Length: 359
Image (cartoon, helix red, strand yellow):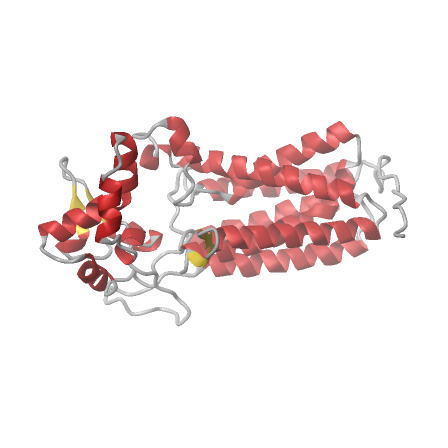
């Protein structure tokens, strides 16, 4: 787990692993889709435009899905709009991104009056390839982790399980469900009796005395409270237990999550395999639109299986939200296969595009 990869010295920007993986996956996916478009005499510029539409609509859909799904847990007590746009701690879902991205793509292609079946086939392998890089980002961020894979003594059941450090999503999740313990110095108890762990970023990168004095000197009370918020619990605990922030950090480094299944890496391998299958199928297909159907079917089945070792709650009868959507996707993919058999092999709007020759 490494949410922050490096910092750009000149501008002071911190590059996050999750965002970097999303960017690499997006750029690589668009490049490969443009190459596929040129091979089948489609418009690569259309693919580029579709990629940016999918990116914008996909992020909105992914955030909206997460916001609705976890509203009662993480957003009900916060202001609506600031909470929705505060993505610093993560909060995107693949199915929300898929639905949002596909919705934007369909609207854009319909407005441009081009072949839906052809261009959806072109971008399908790239869509799943982008997911593979996104799952690497999940692993670096520590989210989307699997279920505990250890006995009561903490011994690993399989050798490839992973543990995440103090304050990671997996560690907080297990502590909240009483699966692991923490010393009282690292637990912050509120006035109403709720407990929480000290923010991971604050404890491993504590502010200096000069930084604290500078933050306390901010005249605007609301801005001052916002700037001090990440360090308030840390400083309060250090004062309460007569410890320095460095001593708290040393104590925190001794605690990690229980071994869990690296479902992020499973998902990455799964997405790479599906993308490879779709890429091979693209060169051998006889019917436009078939790749979209098989994307729904292959990913729906594999995601349903992977959810068995995820820690998501069962919100829809005996299924998780993702499993319920997976069932819908598989059924939709099968219905599309039947519909495609009633349509011409090639889309009537799949008109070859003559590209200008390079000078």
